[in-house]
Image 1 (cartoon, rainbow, N blue to C red):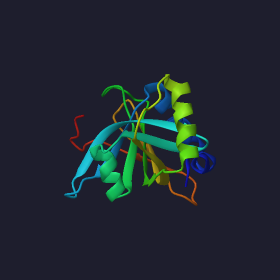
Image 2 (image 1 turned 30 degrees about the vertical axis):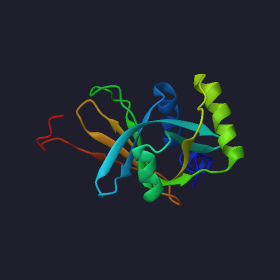
Image 3 (image 1 turned 90 degrees about the vertical axis):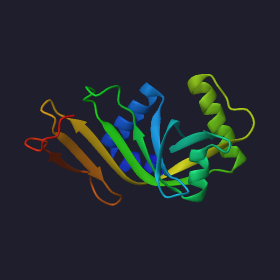
Length: 168
């Protein structure tokens, strides 16, 4: 499912994600390393023509991870431990974009968004979204979780830290 389809199915979650990614210009991407361990890396996400794109340096470790194993998680960033706005986690698969027309549209949109355009080779991935979770934090430390899966409306539940001994 591309970003436009996700936004139609779960508009609140998509709106939050788009606003957060535009505000910070960053997200984190979780990939699977060759040895099976997770890798967390920063990435600059960009939504273009209804698709969430992740541009990466040529032959970067995270790009090589995705070429080998497409499974990934993209998570919006938080400002600090007191940031109660929340975070969006998108689980899915990275699609290696090779179409020169699509790559050029991405480059133009990136130039317009941040006044920079990649030169030379780079990797471009589109995220095929399979699941989304929006986590927001309450004053008492509880988490309000909105879970979304394709074909179902978002479901909300509260995860309480009261009495769990969790301190942070």
